[in-house]
Amino acid sequence: KFPAYITVKDCLISNSRTGIDFWRVRDSIVTRCEVGPIFSWMGIDLNIYCHDIIVEDSIFHKDANSGIKVYSGNYNITIRNNLCYGNKNHGIWVFTGGSNVVIKNNTLKDNGWDGISIQGKVFTPPEVYISNNKIYNNKRHGIGITLYSDYIREGDYYVDIRSNTIYSNQEDGIRIDLPYYSVDIENNIITNNKGFGINKLQSIANSAYNDIWNNALGNYNGTTAGTGDISLDPLFADLSNGDFHLKSRAGRWNGTAWVNDSVTSPCIDAGDPEDDYS
Image (tube, rainbow, N blue to C red; front, side, top):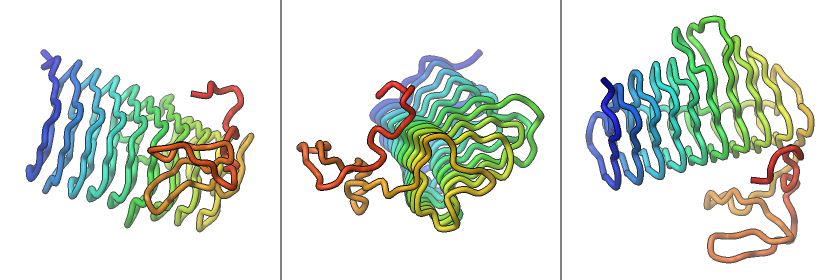
């Protein structure tokens, strides 16, 4: 039987091989924890056959192999409102399995490799939803979001990449190297990465209503601009302090008060008009 209804809350975990290791756990939550530094393995490892797990409002940092790992056979995993920084490899790593994995509203920065890595193998992540994340300054081999495979079974797989800010990573903003996948890329801001904005090596990728601008090797490789895509400076509020709010003459919240800028970002009201504003 699966261990169930575990709550890990308000914990500080440091100087261990792995911070939290769930194995065949279901219907459980990790919330408001700080995990790091970790000297060998994962900040949190959602190991084989975990399901209906929430990881939220937590910090995973410093020297872990990856901040958060989702391994084979997992399903209904929600990762939201977390900060992953300074890890050796990935901020979040979905490896060789995971159905209905939702990665939402996280900050993934200054990691040694990728902000988010989706890796297919014999068991393949069939559904992953990536939205509203800030992914920036990931170093060395750092890609904002990467989808790749050593080996993947033929099938019907889907990744939705929506409303993310992907900025100044060491290589591509998004790299897609997975066969058999359908990837929707919509309403994202992908700028100032040192590789391509979107680098599609294989799979089907649909781009729409993104701002893809000033990426060092070019904005697109293996694909082209889609419906509603633009290529303009997004006019972030304060990059030096990690503030990716968009400048606006009409006013924006700066954390303590409303301020009015002298310019308005071209990204405001430039997303898919069929989408709900929220």
